[in-house]
Image (tube, helix red, strand yellow):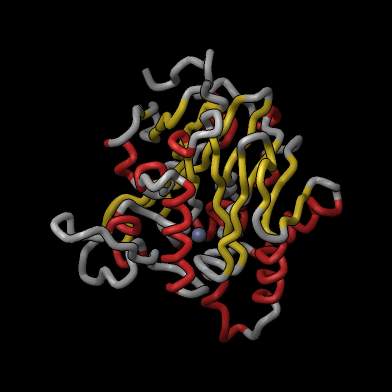
Length: 292
Ligand SMILES: [Zn+2]
């Protein structure tokens, strides 16, 4: 039995992103496409997401210009590909506070949001630092942090203090402190009945690409290489990578880097009329394919 359908939904992309930003130390290796995606999870009578993308207005739009993001489409348009509306989304797992993951909470008016308490606290701390420390904030819109704090005021925020199992049935949040950000987390979907062989690990930005999971040399034994952007420790990043692989039943292909264009080579997918990809990781019993 498969509990949840899971789709990786591209909502924008950077056409030419420097590879050294993706793989730590990969200097002078040029540029490649960097998709921007969130994940839709549907099943067990609910609709959930991992991250929400950014909103193409105000500071979100300014940051998108700074990073050369193009082809943005709204969640209403993107989710319609799976016959879901933003209003139907009941649960959102925020892997971390970077603008391209946490910048569009406003688009999901019925959702309850889950984030690590440490992520919220440390971004408030970082915002209070002298401007000489502003590199720490280079991918975070302070207004997104304020919006998340306001979700708490509305009674729609759950602050997690470390790992939590079965946040929804078969869906676990796993803390990854002091890695890509101070309070990053990843999400494991245990889609089979008890067996780890049908687990999916939704990695947020703890890995960007397959190379972070297996290295850059296909002839060499696999190795973990950290992502090219982090405020925490490289050691924590690669040990978190190993933990994700273990949660994926030891299969690196069950760890899903959402900034990886190569997902198209591993999973059924298609490109929509706006040049954005929908990738189908799993179909719950009774659900029809959106890429066939
Ligand atoms: Zn990030």
